[in-house]
Image (cartoon, rainbow, N blue to C red):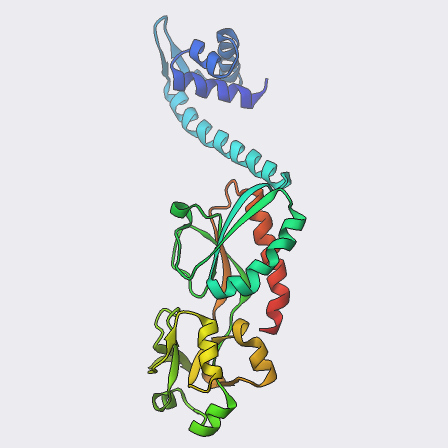
Length: 299
């Protein structure tokens, strides 16, 4: 006796209300469907169905078994799909969204390499700083930076994303170097409006966390544009290390207030539940995590 086949026959009989319709649903005969249910009852030592010439109904034992049977069969189907997905070759269209600057600098350049590994995958990369709805807008993966709101999505950390308060040596020489976050009140600050509270900069002093409300005449919704403003000696700004890495390394920008820095941001990949995860999504997230783990060591 194949227990799983007998369980499927029993569920089909309950769903359709007859052995004839159950046989049709399972692409078998009424007789075989009946035999499988009878074999199941003999195996369990309990009658599952009340049979009359005109109707079928569940016994008390049958009702209990049916509820658990549905759960077991669902779990088996899910496990089978998961195993098939694990070995299946990634294919199909992969819809990805990522922040504009980070996407241009770090995601887009990796796409040809990913395609070389998985030639049956086509890629549609949408770069936007707007937080899209993955399900409603049809995206498979979203790359996000910063604190994540609670959702039903899976979030996998890909890399750290440190942020520094920066200025040029020329600006600091002319206007002075801040030694405490409160000193920012005496400085011009360039505002990155992509941050949730662009004019409220967070800091830490010991165990105490606080924020300073800064002001400035220049703002932009692009980390690259903010960096360009700062390089023109116009003020201080919050600069993600992944954007200003070269300038920080060669001394064109200097970090300040490092001992007060409270930014603990990360880069994440967001995607739908692990259940029945498509091979193309699994392959892409694994690939991105591997590639970013290397480049982010310099951040």
